[in-house]
Image 1 (tube, rainbow, N blue to C red):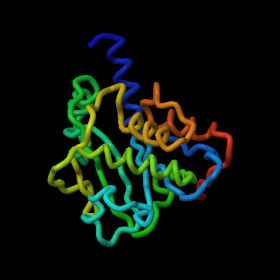
Image 2 (cartoon, rainbow, N blue to C red):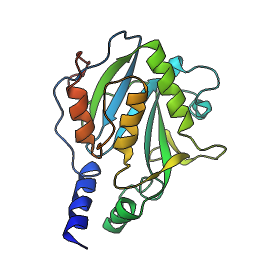
Image 3 (tube, rainbow, N blue to C red):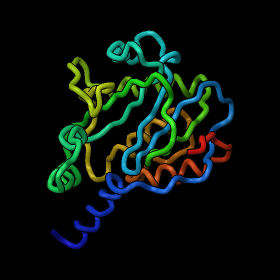
Amino acid sequence: MSIRAASLALVWLAACGPALPEPPPATAALGAATTIQVTANGWHTGIVVPVAALTPGVLPERADFPAARHLELGWGDAAYYPMPDPPPGAVLRAAFAGGPAVLHVTGHVYRPEPGQGRTVVEIDLTAAGLAALLRALDASFQRPASPRPGLDPASRFYPATGRFSLFNTCNSWTARQLATAGVAVDPSGVITAGQLLSQLDDLPQPLVMPAS
């Protein structure tokens, strides 16, 4: 492996590696109507939306989580993401070879809270921003498809649109969804969770970040 390739691998592993320090309070757009969450566990980010905010026909996968009041969605490599403890070879294959993607959907009765290595950032969206986000999330599913078991009993994996690569990670996907919703983040160059959280920290209005 060349020095450049090894360096890129290290950058990608930072997106899927050790826990990151929690950032200071970040910011959100004006005209808030509904609160969503961005979660980060140090290597992976996801988006949490309230089930009550879902409009008819959007995210029909909600039917797989009848008790859930909130759905957490994260995007990633179809081979690597479902592995609870992936070997180094799987990490490198996902980083350099890339491949099809999956969405990991988790049903929560209560909204996720920070702690135990997880950062939670709350963002208030306008009604228009929320509608745009829900459309983008819905379009990320590759349908029709049958779900597979997720990483815990309350979750499922679904085939997703797009292809995973070193430069198109779970965090790139999260940044694009937020940008679609009108959140002032730039998805270009976002590879790691830390890069995304840093942008959220730079937004002009205070976000709510519950204390851990």
